[in-house]
Image (cartoon, rainbow, N blue to C red; front, side):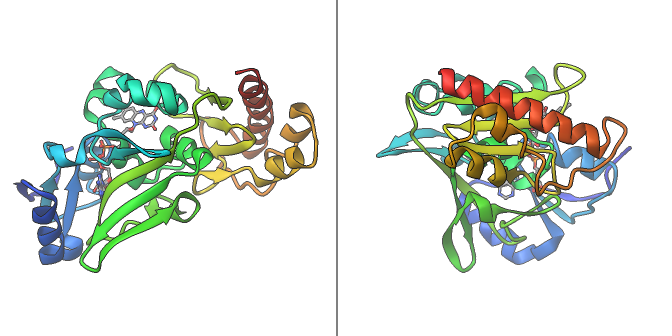
Length: 271
Ligand SMILES: Cc1cc2nc3c(=O)[nH]c(=O)nc-3n(C[C@H](O)[C@H](O)[C@H](O)COP(=O)(O)OP(=O)(O)OC[C@H]3O[C@@H](n4cnc5c(N)ncnc54)[C@H](O)[C@@H]3O)c2cc1C
């Protein structure tokens, strides 16, 4: 299908983006890699008057080690996350998970921040940043604010980034040497997860088990209480509300969550 008509502006700075968002309000949409936005426009699920392209803003594309964190610019491509030596050394979960996002074309165009703001509960990177305890740096007309990961994913395809705001940066703790794993269950190699589980040390996050990515708090509590990986994993579906769709029903997703959580915990413990 063909999108409804819109004006296109290639932003030349963050300030330029923000002034356009203030000027056009909910009639403006930010375009990063376009891997999710373009299908939405083509299906006419959104009909913005103005599309503001941030994909060439080099000030939003970087990976930097800063103290005990790594800062990732929102417009950093999935491919750059995969290739980052700093992330491979300090936060190896992220390059691994980014390598599983879609196919090569998607990874060359799609951005780290775009995937997170999109807020798809089936996406891979949201579960990873939840398990890592990331912080999101957001800028809008009222200034700059920092949002911790558990408050960022608010509802189905809805995050803490307002319509007149821009996600600037994601900050993740450096965790070299800490055990990690990501278990993604798909029918085909480059599909979205039917269910996925991220584990960092004893923190566990689930993809596609609810309207938002979520921490598996019952699993984490069981581990803190001394349960084995196999015992704790039995709690993986507690508090979840997965959809039933053409890929899997609720019961099967619960089963997958338990199996994948046990695998992730065992792998993380062995690293
Ligand atoms: C064939 C295909 C397969 C895929 N497979 C997977 C997969 O297996 N796993 C997975 O996780 N994802 C998958 N994706 C989605 C992919 O990860 C996208 O890159 C990602 O969802 C969106 O990133 P983007 O940069 O393309 O954002 P865009 O599509 O440009 O934008 C997405 C949304 O975020 C907003 N936005 C973007 N950046 C910002 C910002 N900095 N501040 C404020 N708002 C912003 C946009 O306005 C829009 O609402 C797939 C996509 C395709 C096309």
